[in-house]
Image (cartoon, rainbow, N blue to C red; front, top):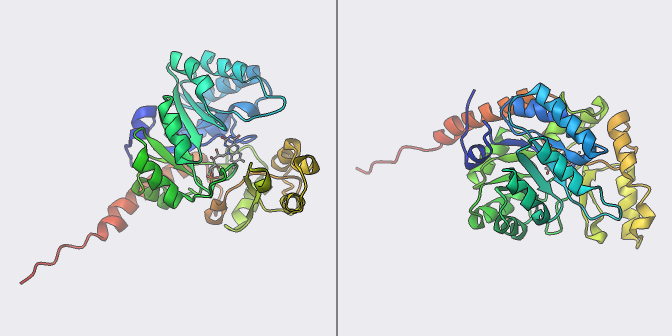
Length: 331
Ligand SMILES: Cc1cc2nc3c(=O)[nH]c(=O)nc-3n(C[C@H](O)[C@H](O)[C@H](O)COP(=O)(O)O)c2cc1C
């Protein structure tokens, strides 16, 4: 088994610079534990658990599956009836979790408690300016999502090929690249662009331990890189989802002047959840990224992590080193 040491692996005490990002309805104990057991960093998604007490139980479940470090994703989104973020945050630290991925908005209100308890904070954002702000308020590392990503890519539309080196030029703390990563080639590219590792969502959705219907995993394998759609663009809350009859209807309604209220039922979280539970990929909107175009199988999460790291080492030692032609000696 190869090892790639980066500032990320050193800061977070994991073997491999490969993270399984927070995923609503997908990031449960089995998946997070499988990723961590293989030496990556698995994350349980806090808000998938209906209450903070359920989150505590989910963390205990993961502890039974691995002794290695895993973390919790806390996604902080503006909402009319927000979940009890303070209670989730308290449940996280009281459970002894020492790695948290924050996302969705500025993590500043949560930093005090996390730092008091020695929690390492990995903040996920979609622009260099937000990454710099997170660095200023004291996060330990940043995960930066390019335009390719599943979920919320922000409104700047900067793909990873520019966003990652732009972040590398400005940040001094470790950071990982996210959005569009699915294999060893992506990991090597991310390292070459200046990142300290990769974060993946869609690729880990398509693993044995991912707790969603096999029909959804097969739909991802069958889809290509064009089969996603951006919804909520006119509302400036863009989300990349699988392209289906529901997403296309949402785009049509909003493009013709509709408001959120006109699509509320179509985009309801409960409908998206049904997709994952029943495998009916037309039941609602569901998140997946462009990277589905290079997802061709459903391995265990552990095999996936090992494959990515081993193949990355082979690419570095083999193909890339082989490109270094000996200098021509002039006569
Ligand atoms: C099904 C699904 C659900 C997601 N839910 C969340 C979430 O609740 N919070 C969050 O911060 N990111 C969420 N994400 C984004 C991922 O953590 C990650 O940033 C993104 O998937 C990276 O892009 P990729 O899919 O191309 O790897 C989700 C992604 C997927 C595929």
